[in-house]
Length: 375
Image (cartoon, rainbow, N blue to C red; front, side):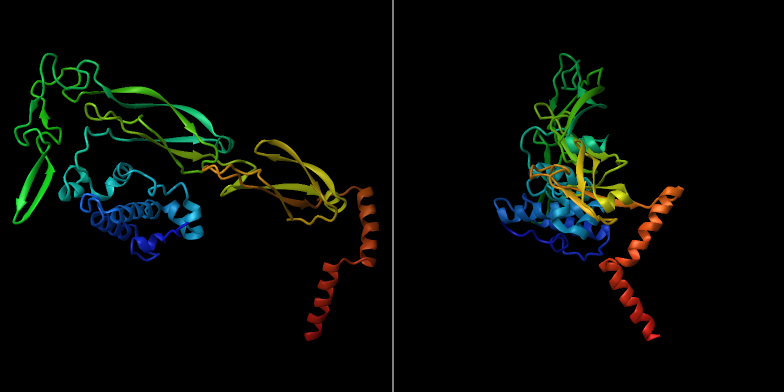
């Protein structure tokens, strides 16, 4: 298995680099290794994807903080650009180039014409509970999006009319601009790349071929998602050009905090209070888990702060690689008030403590004697 390169090294920036410096560096590298400039060059394509993966993490404050602290393992699943298609990379990072820089160099948003244009992706935010994140769930949301106009069936033309071929680009959708020995193709300013113009627009949609509607979309959340995870719902975005496929819906997950559990990667942590006698004599206690109640054995002489590990009782790995553990920290509670009987028994117990000093206390007393000798 090949070792992943450091994201800062990939973008040639220092670890303390500002967001603007990271953005500028990514922009420079993306233009250098863009597939349209390096057709057939697999190495350049891999470097383009590698730079996109690095930028996706370092441009996000939360992901960057996790990466700085824990490395690549902390952002697995957050940085998926390696396995993403080129279309995904363009749609995810188009804002870096201001929506026009790729057109300046390559035309058509940085992509050669590959058939009807895909529709734009939409974004939404979905809040789920801690338990839903652990177990997975299905949610239905309602959103507004454009749908194909029912009157003109998406053509944008009035009934009985047809769009005309654009006279500026002659139906190609691009125009060439020549300067010296450079020839740069850009999107046609008249038809905006469609190759056709609507002369008699549809009265229902004004020639757009689209109308806004409220729709319901079901989103399936996989088990193990973390706060900030992006779930992609294919084909639930905006409609594309005629015969082009719809865009996608990008759903960003917000996981609500839990009153008992805290998450650390795929592990979960909780504190459980126990009494002095339970710790000293040992006992069996009931604890909460993600799947309900469970019992653990507290051995005699358990110390406050001791941690018990329940293997496989944490979050399932979102990539299907097993499950984390549950860490249970016991906290010994000292009673604030004692009744007469309890106080009497503890005083009797204290007398035996003086005769049977434990190893930790004995070590402390010896250190204390040495300390006072030095003064």
